[in-house]
Image (cartoon, rainbow, N blue to C red):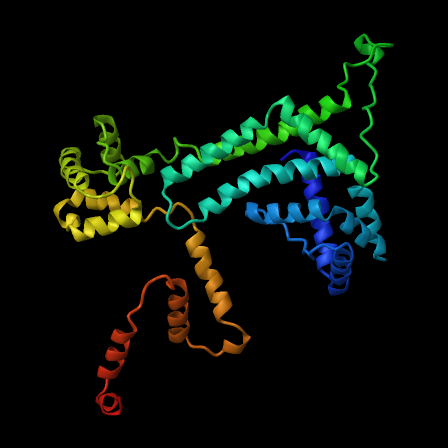
Amino acid sequence: MVPSVRNNFGIISALYNLIESSTKRHVIFEEIQEEAGLKALTIKQLSDTRWTCRWNCLKVVLTRYPQIISTLQVMEAPESHLLIHSMERFDFVFHLFIMSEIYLITNILSKYLQSSHICISQALNQVKMTVNALESLRNETEFERFYSTALQISEENEIDPPKELRKKKVPVRFGGGDKTLNALNIEDHYRINTYYAVLDTIITSIKTRFDENIIIDVLLMEKLFLTKTLLNENELKQLSKQYSLNYDDLRGEQRLYKAKLSTSTYQSQATLSEIRLFILENHLNACLPVMDELFKILWTIPVNTCTCERSFSTLRRIKTYLRSTTGEYRLSGLALLNIEREVEIDYGEIVKEFISAKNTRKIVF
């Protein structure tokens, strides 16, 4: 991350710790917002991994900037004066605005990747769209828009515009003397050293994280199972070599599978859940053992870990202070009901099974 932007996030983190760590200070912030006729918002905590949390935090700081400054002025804490000094600078406003706009784009990708029904190829398409959107911002026209907006926000909040950088003289021992280095003007400085640097860092990071060369085998398996397109000879050899499968068997089973898939009602690409049902309903797991092995591998490679994380969050919500004595069996059942709440349950069958479990229940019910 660019040092100046990293410093900005440090200021925002300190702001969160100061205001939201105290109920009294939080109430002051809410009252100032309500006096201005605005809906009371809460400053969100920054997260190292969740882009959505960062976007929500930046949005609140940007939209409630005057109210935050007023809150800090009312507070008697010594840290508030330091934060006011750090926030009432063009640097802070400019970095805050560009990062909020960038996270606005990446937040869409973040939400999409949390879906439990996407596959790797669909995720990569969304990643490419996000990268293209970020790359479209990397030009002078977009920079001028960002820079002028930051100047306007600074002017509205009585913040001094950025000053020209001090020109440095070349030392005499290096042939200088009266000569000065070719220093950038202030606008070029923000464009090259901040705006372009931030965009390049984020774009490179996304491309590295979602490198197709790393997950090429997963993409080939998705092409094999989810589409009606046949894999070529090299692609089949790569899969058979990677997972120690018989190449001839895989090539033959692919033909049978694609022939069966072509008779289905699926469009250009099905989902993993649909293909799982398709394989089980047509008993292809028994007919095509090599393909079945590959599908098991594909099925056990998650696109993300959001479902697992939601399961952990479920336990935290269920086992509260009032349920501290809940046993493992009951807790497991409650968690399963909550996690799999989308599954339709036939309550009539449950009642019948409950009654038939014991003879005494048959008499009562």
